[in-house]
Length: 152
Image (cartoon, rainbow, N blue to C red; front, side):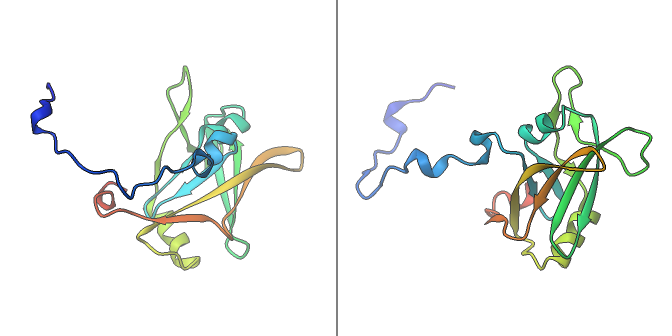
């Protein structure tokens, strides 16, 4: 489809300000693992996958009181394992649809159903097992735009 210049509306850029790139450098650019929770799903950053050596399956453990979430690499033999990757050749994380789980978190943590919550994680160990800890006691959050609500 060709763009016809005569049909494009001319506007004034008066009043607009440049947003400093420093404001846009989030955890993705610093390589920190992140977990993002919607009312019906959860996703993890590529950095989270890399931190756990691109394992295919994880188990999620929650501490309701501290708002902590542990991500533990496991095998398919673990009855509570979930596949968090797609594309076996070059694994990437996938958005995990899990309304039964995330809606309970939203209720327990008194979160707004119309918002999204994100936390940065860090590598921790317990009993010589490497895992990721995400602390959602002060998460980054934002409201869903009306046109995105149906796509969550």
